[in-house]
Image (tube, rainbow, N blue to C red; front, side):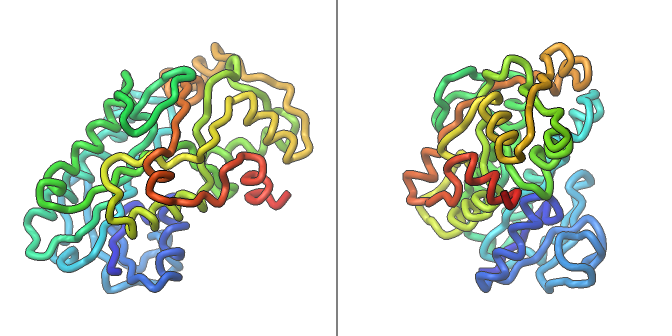
Length: 309
C-alpha cells in the first residue's frame, strides 16, 4: 500500500514506519519541516517521494501529494503530559488534534482519488474517570477536558466518512515502551527504589505494549470490517497498585514511596485528576471480535520483554 503518516516522529510513529516498510508498504510522512531533515520520523537524511509538508495549525497542506494514496494514518497531536494544563496548553492540545484532523478530512473531499482508509488516533480519555465500570466502544463519553477533546477529535473525520472513506478511530490506552511515554518516565524513580502507588492505587490503568499498538494499526489497515472507534488497549487492565507491584518486581526494587493524591494535584494541577488519578477499565472488544491477536495480553511478561528482564 501507499501510506501517509502524520505524527511520524512521535512514540507510535517512530515504531510504526519501519514496521510498515518492512512489510513492503511505501510510506510517506506529513512533515512540519523540509523533507529529509533530522528528527522528521525516519533515519537522518532519508526521504520518500510520498513525503509532504503541512501546517495543521495554519491550515495548509500539500494536497496534491495525497492523490492516489491508499491510506492515511493520523497520529499528530501535542503531548497531553508535557506540562501543567494552562489555558494556552489546553488550547494547543485541542487545536493540534481537532484542527489537524479536520484539515486532513476536508482535504480528502477535494481529491479526485481519495484514500480508502483513514486511521485516526483518539484516546480512552473519551471515557473519562469511570471507576471500575467496564467500558467498551459502545460506552457513553465521559465528562471533562479529555472526553471533550476526544469527541471533537473523532468528530473531525466526519467529512471523510461522508465521502465513503473507511475511518478507524484507534482509542489508545497508556502506551508502554522503555523508549518513551509514561513507562520511560517511571523507570528512574523505580530503579532508585523511590516508586510507589499514586493516590489510593485503586484507579484502573488500561495499558498496551507499543508492539501491539503497531500491530493493531496494521490490523486496522487490513481488516475491511473494522471501522469507527476501536479501543486499542490490552485485554487485561490493572490497578495502579498492581502496576506498581509488578514493575517493582520486574526491576527487583522496592516500591514503598506512595505519591499522595494531594501531592499529585499540587504538582500537576488539573492534569493529575485526568491522567494520574482517573480510572478507566477499558476492554478491546472491537479488536478481539475482529480476530486481532495480542502479543502481550498480561502486564508482567510485557514489562519483562520491554526491559529485557
